[in-house]
Length: 274
Image (cartoon, rainbow, N blue to C red; front, side, top):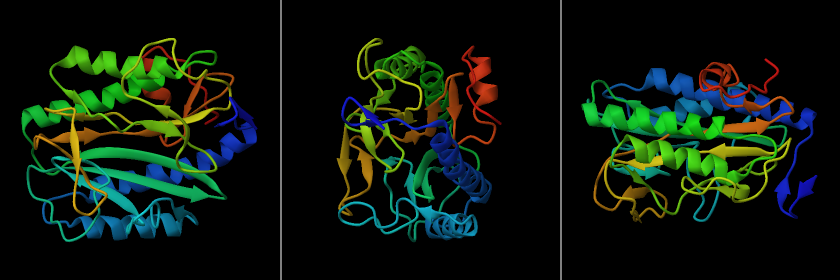
């Protein structure tokens, strides 16, 4: 079912099907978080993710996606890479940060989430960047309400980041609708005005994903035609969750607890069934 001619609305049964895909993604990312350490290559992380997704009976969303076709199961974006880094021979070193983006398909339904992980001990400003980015994600999720607007999410992300200091909200990349495809309408920008944009209805599913840098809002595309880098070399962080709106509130489909703890701490109604 669609409204505004483009935005896919899920039945409760379809949201539950998306939860299965979301759990595959969330559990794979936790496996990868535990595997990140100095001396591990991004290709090794990719192989671990591929095995985890296969063992769950799912398919990777990213492998073969786009043009040129993305050649891996996950995105691994290190230091000044914002998103879409291609796993390979890069060996992680003490003090690096790596953003890991993962997608999976179960019975035709997609889940999509990302985390940024410190490799050993990292600089204080980098650790704070990670905290700000992840908290901005949760502020955005907590702003979603049936009857609200996409701009409510965008404004919550932007307001939190701006209030924390001189961070760059990376231009040109947004969250998105998700369901029977990985990327669907509507876009979910990380800047915006509350009360603007498409209306949030019960059954809508969105991926919210702040991408924040220690410097510039601008980015450049690497020669591999995928990796997005900050144009000033500043380091970046990226966190993402997929959520659905139910009649009760927000259900974070890619979080093991459905987002209950973080949402309730922010005073937002939890809409999950777990």
